[in-house]
Length: 198
Image 1 (spheres, one colour):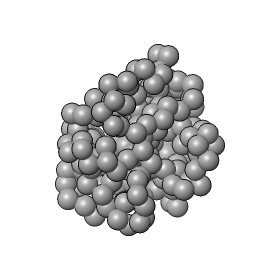
Image 2 (cartoon, one colour):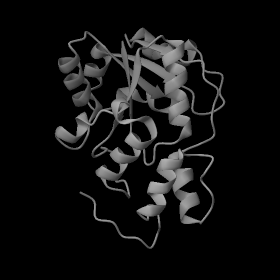
Image 3 (cartoon, helix red, strand yellow):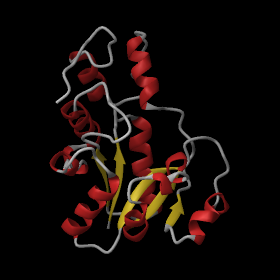
């Protein structure tokens, strides 16, 4: 059984990999697949879709990364990707990893009814709150399917890594070595570097 981990992954970092590992173990998934967004609906990344996809493949391994959004209409709305995955995988519901702060606002997403009907959510804490089912009681009562992962908060974020690169600080302990090398080799996240998005 598969579980999907959607995100911009700009860049993919060690906390993403640890979350995937622990969720795979806790919920007995056969695999956790990263799904990088091609064109996120609510942000304009400062890297190309190709950069983000390649970094995800470097960090997680090519077989653990799905480029499905690179072949779908833009912007990359989750409901559209979910429907395509469901059709391709021939499954009733898609298992989908999501952070606490995103899930609490899920009903503001594009076409939330499609997500409600087609997704089992695995909720991950992003801060140090004591997260329980009660935190989402209003969503449970409206028919949302979710489970809360027992994962310790890891204080790593993609924006923190980007800022460290801009400031000339070390990122060795936050990302896999191959991603670190790719970032420096291609001059990613440097304020003075203007990159053309494709």
